[in-house]
Amino acid sequence: MKKTLLITGGAGFIGSHVVRLFVQKYPEYKIVNLDKLTYAGNLENLSDVEDSDNYIFEKGDIVDKEFIQSLFKKYDFNGVIHLAAESHVDRSITNPMEFIMTNVVGTVNLLNVAKNNWSDDFADKLFYHVSTDEVYGSLPETGLFLETTPYDPQSPYSSSKASSDHFVRAYGNTYGLPFIISNCSNNYGPNQFPEKLLPLFINNIRNNKELPVYGDGLFTRDWLYVEDHARAIDLIYHKGKNAETYNIGGFNEWTNIDLIKVMCAQMDEILRNDKGTSEQLITYVKDRPGHDKRYAIDASKIKNELSWEPSLQFEEGLQKTIQWYMNNQQWIDNVTSGDYQKYYMEQYG
Ligand code: NAD
Ligand code: DAU
Image (cartoon, rainbow, N blue to C red; front, side, top):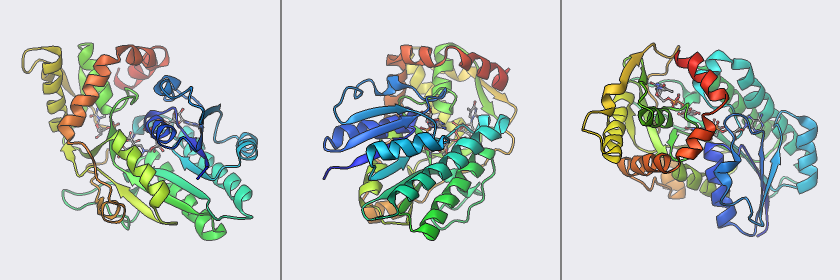
């Protein structure tokens, strides 16, 4: 069936993998990628699909009402997959307003325009909001986040995402807008901006720079390969139930320090360094303020209802990821030129 889909944030890390999957898997769909191209958005991520007949890029801001309205008029969308966001926790600590503008105001603006344009007939329409496990707050040593876990966001980033989730549910409940939300754990893989842990550390090892481990390094995250997240988004968009929430995770918990040590060992092998060379760059630094201790997802609902499972073992995914960054050094050099240097100095001194 023909469909026209709006994917927001498609030039970013996860968005670019989602756009590629949809453009290649659904030649009968028209895929419109709307992105503001902030520091995190990069059209190079999509160079392999940019000439496809079913792909269109529109540069713009989700906060801009007239622009979003004009897009809905131009394309008559059947659905929205909303990924555009400010996504880095450390940046939300230094500049929360930008997170409120994009993540909250931008999302409400999209909801409003979608509701107004679709309200004559909501049948076959869907607003799919891509969110994070961070909305649930921090876990003690045991336990897992379920879809029913109460929200308890702790950072400006997670508070802005939690707020946007609430607005999506409110538009469903109040106006009948068909919606789905998914909350995913930490993604890793190609094309992630090197402010996030793994690409930052891979790039630092490559440049023989310190690896700044926050606090005691005993913070726990659940890691998922980005293409597995994109596959989950595809399944949920097509097979998920209206007004439902799906948690997505890798069944793959690591403390930061253990993960960093595995990554250092793999880097030594790839760079043909003596064992232990990269680990020597580990430097414990001041902790992130309000740092969430542990995230861990119970992904059994999506596994049982939609038969989704992660496809890669972590060590394999990590190796693929490191290899990608080593084979695409020009990509890293391009995105770390300019403003990145200023950000790095402000964050790490
Ligand atoms: P990212 O920072 O790599 O990309 C965000 C994209 O949104 C960029 O291309 C950027 O240019 C665009 N954007 C930002 N502000 C915009 C605006 N006002 N208007 C239009 N476009 C704008 O983010 P990511 O890591 O790919 O995350 C994508 C989504 O997935 C986010 O909503 C994030 O909260 C969520 N998420 C991320 C992770 C993760 O581990 N990275 C995990 C779970 C959920
Ligand atoms: O859980 C999903 C979330 O995962 C997403 O919603 C966010 O968009 C994404 O950025 C990510 O958030 P985290 O804060 O978990 O990711 P980050 O890569 O920034 O940090 C991972 C862990 O590593 C965290 O405990 C902080 C730590 N860390 C991070 C950096 C950048 C360090 O020790 N040193 C660092 O320099």
